[in-house]
Image (cartoon, rainbow, N blue to C red; front, side, top):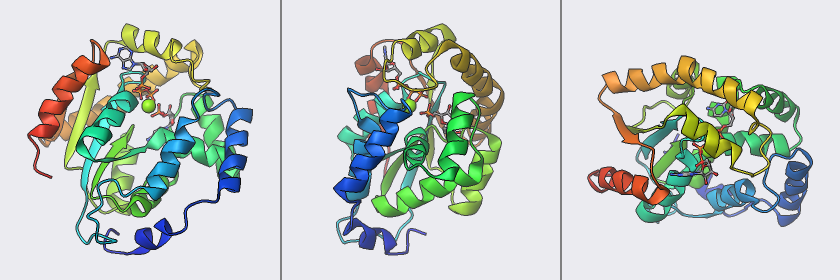
Length: 248
Ligand SMILES: Nc1ncnc2c1ncn2[C@@H]1O[C@H](COP(=O)(O)OP(=O)(O)OP(=O)(O)O)[C@@H](O)[C@H]1O
Ligand SMILES: Nc1ccn([C@H]2C[C@H](O)[C@@H](COP(=O)(O)O)O2)c(=O)n1
Ligand SMILES: [Mg+2]
């Protein structure tokens, strides 16, 4: 799909500011986004308009370098992806942010997604992969971080089928449960799933469905496991060593 030029064409017509403002209001109504940090929409807007990682010729003809970024809820995936994007020029696509953006659009699909996220369950793969596929195409980037995906075997298989490729590497942030719970309860961004009942369910889903995906990629020699305790800067030093050694 990266051979198509659709992404480059769409980059010329980013979403209008009025539709962005309407979405933002809907986000607040659902308490999905922090009132003090409208980051998901800003990040998505950047995604749709920036040239992060593109080759500068208005479109690239090669498969992008893809890094899946995994780890339990609150392990610091988003925090570290922001740093990787800034230091290594990757486009940052967060599966969770794309799903929250779909909820904010007010679509029927968004209502289903909201219900699933509140329950700490996983959204049907077709929906998530289609959002990721479109975002990859629109970003037109040649280096992409896909944050929080794949969350289960069904996600992984759907990505291979719909996008037609595999990740080049998988980053796995390994963090103790009590630390993840502490971070999530302190996140204070108004997310509907940052409450202890939903967190317990997300942790169970992580153990039962996501760890097997990490094991699958480990058996294929693709996983870089990082100790996700310590400060964000300390963890990023380990991340930096990995990305510095890669050939994109
Ligand atoms: N190393 C760290 N030490 C302490 N707090 C951290 C660290 N890294 C991130 N945090 C904080 O922990 C919270 C969760 O981090 P983050 O949102 O990056 O996690 P995540 O893995 O993306 O979670 P989720 O899967 O729920 O999206 C945030 O409030 C963040 O500021
Ligand atoms: N591949 C994915 C990614 C996310 N979701 C849903 C379920 C998660 O609890 C929620 C939040 O994601 P996060 O921001 O924590 O990465 O979104 C999913 O169903 N499938
Ligand atoms: Mg996150």
